[in-house]
Amino acid sequence: SAESSPPGRGHGLDIEGITHRFGDVTVLNQIHLQVNPGEFVALLGPSGCGKTTILRLVAGLLTPTVGQIRIDGQRVEHVPTHKRNVGIVFQNYALFPHMNVFDNVAYGLRAQGAKTTNVRSRVQDMLELVQLEVMGDRFPNELSGGQQQRIALARALAVEPRILLLDEPFSALDKNLRLDMQIEVKRLLTEQGITTMFVTHDQEEALSMADRIAVMSNGVVQQFDTPTTVYDRPSTLFVSQFVGTTNLISGTLIQHNRESCVVSLADGEQMQLAIDPDMPINSPVQLAIRPENLRLSTEPSPNALPVRVDICLPLGAATIYEVRTASGIPIKVTQPRGIGVKSLVPGQTVYLTLASAHACSIFHVSDTDPSV
Ligand code: ATP
Image (cartoon, rainbow, N blue to C red):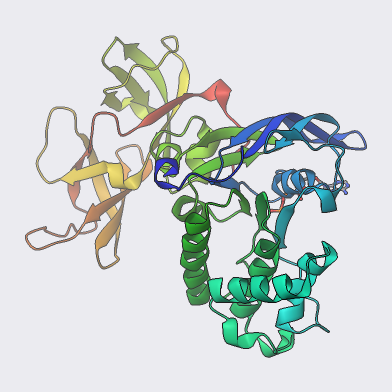
């Protein structure tokens, strides 16, 4: 979490009211993001939602149509890239192929006019940081994909950037190497207290690495909060669908008071929830419920919904069931497995309840965002 990060340097990064247009197409609309010093923020969203455009604006590769960007408190919209002191690792930002590893890492330092002895010790430090100190003489084509990404990171960090920008830096790596790199980079950036903005369309990567996540769609930020809040309390239907797996169940709000509400599902089945949605009776709603927040019991109980087991997928530590209500609404339920936990079988009638009274989000259907 943000609290566990070491205090970073400077004032971080402020993006204030950024709107960006290409011609007459608006690709970013009123973006506000404040990144604390030393914080690791992920921009998460589907392809084309504007993530990379934000990085390019921060890097100075684009000038915003409207709005302000501050790095360490300093306005930078009209400061050229090379004077912003940002480190950039783009997915396709390859190493210079004709330079060995040492010269690649030294590149930015030499461009800044650093003294030869300083360059040597700084490059050595950076190579130690990414644990490739013995590779200085190699050329990029003599390195694995993961090693190349580590060198790209060392090159970006060598100039002590005020902000580090990472654009899908792991997407070219295979799954195992990817996880190693995620852990490695997270450790390194946390230790160094480096303010980082990170683009990904991979929700697991964002959830596992970021202090906070900005979930984006169509050029707007839908929610900007910690991974747990984004996951447990999605602020919009879009966020609840895009982050994690969720059951979406349509219904109508037929009753509510300060503690609870009743939603009528298709064909009149009813669900009672311990939440009070701030909307009028008869509103069309969508319930969003995570599969792990549902429970199945073989015994009926007052608020339980009778369902039929359709499919079971034993996955080792947990079993995923797909069950159907009497009217055929499919619902996914994840149940932990363990000694004494009886497996359910297809065709069996069981009773569905919420694991906790608050383990559900309810959205007014007119609030519906573009679906995923
Ligand atoms: P991806 O995950 O696919 O990289 P993204 O979220 O990073 O997507 P951007 O690259 O920021 O998306 O692009 C946002 C929108 O702006 C897209 O619709 C894209 O086609 C458009 N766009 C990007 N660059 C330009 C440009 N130079 N001229 C016109 N349109 C552009």
